[in-house]
Image 1: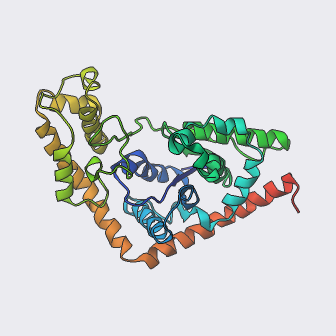
Image 2: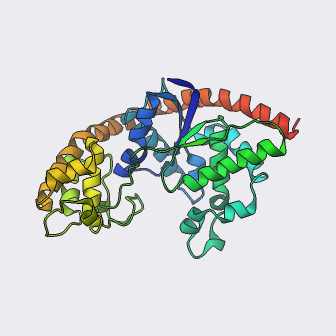
Image 3: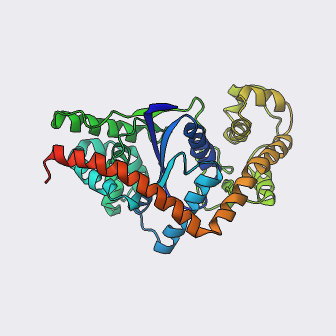
Length: 333
């Protein structure tokens, strides 16, 4: 285990974790936990950049925690906590609000995507939340951050903030965090539209595989997944012209941890019902036990709250020490 390396990552408590969350993040979290020190945060402060029903938010925080544990994260090996329980996140975010430049935030494409055409009605929190994301990482002096394509820009901002802070105050307080890019970043797409990411916000439940889906649910959803009546191509170039087919093959490949080429060799020339049957079998084998464990954990909310409380205590020790140094450098008494 690399003692000089510290990984930080967070997941928003939106409820109903799905296959995209598992393959794109949680599965990798478990691998990283075996290699180095890790901090995994349920980022509830980020969640309220758009209005959340308070009771639903509380339940979603616990469900996300259950998802962490059910997929294999160990609270004895990794720090698992919810962001709002450590006030240092908000305090450091304010300091970074005064370090970051408006021009930097204006370049953030995710704000433009999430705010839509009527950005004047978006919350200020949605605009400045990349600064909070930088605070999440740098509060613990994390050295590495797992990132997908949609978060690279935010990590670049975090690096810019760290460098500017160090330069402004002429002290190397913060490390410049490095992106931790998986060899094969899993970008799971909608089962109904292979050009869009799998998402909880999609109105159709048939667009995604939820981690709590039953075997019957999985079979139905994969059976209804968009495909066509032709045979499966024998090469990647032709598959790329069929985004829904490529998505199904990519999911199968990621779950079995084998190359796309191996999967193509197995399914080429066959009709899509063959692929869908094979994919359903693998999903049931891997996802259903996770879903069962999530449901079991949610039956004992006291245990989940205990895990978060213990994680908070560990995170707070690190945060208090680091923030004390920051406050001293800034000039606070």
